[in-house]
Length: 268
Image 1: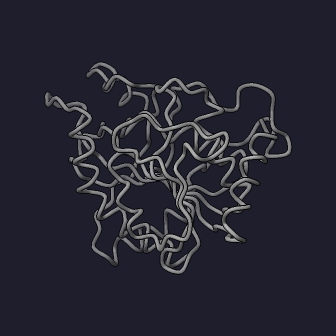
Image 2 (image 1 turned 45 degrees about the vertical axis):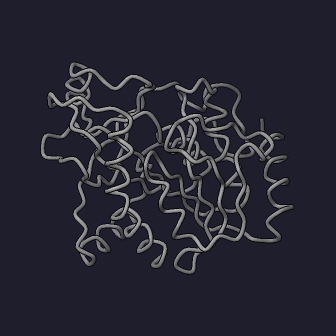
């Protein structure tokens, strides 16, 4: 796998003419609008890139974009890959490995999620302070020792300095933030109410079907992570949501998330 990662990184490097990204950004369901803020230098459809899977989920455009935002060089995934699409965890996390080889020094992740905390409302932004992993761990199997240790520490896997910076920016810009623990499950079914109650008992504040594998792999490579969940439905209510609702709520809240990300990039 390490040779495949290097091969893909080399393919990209040959086409971006010395452009070296500082920050990697993963845009979740309904949040791809941030790509419009990027002064794009290079963009590749996933299907063009050797070794990349192809995103099959509506709301994920499937492009890797290189450019500048607020004076920072970024590489953004406009759409991600999910375990429920049938990909192995090594494929789900492959782009994060590639971005690390391309030079990123920190990773921003975003997702749409169901609210568990009863104080949350649809449209809230939740800064992820920790996670609970209910998926297969992406580090199962032979360790890629050149990328990270066999037993990486997951304490403070969401960087406290970045969280503090986001808090200060949000206060200054008038952006309301929630904070909490993200529960990552396999999907693709939306959770039952009994599952939401279980997630609440074990300490979860929001639940989704992504993000955790990418964060684990980033921390395996010692890359600092900042994460935001857009609360697109309240799981403990009687309302019935669907993927269209998730995308629509993600787009509405995405404007505030974009403003937050831009502020953080400006002050890195």
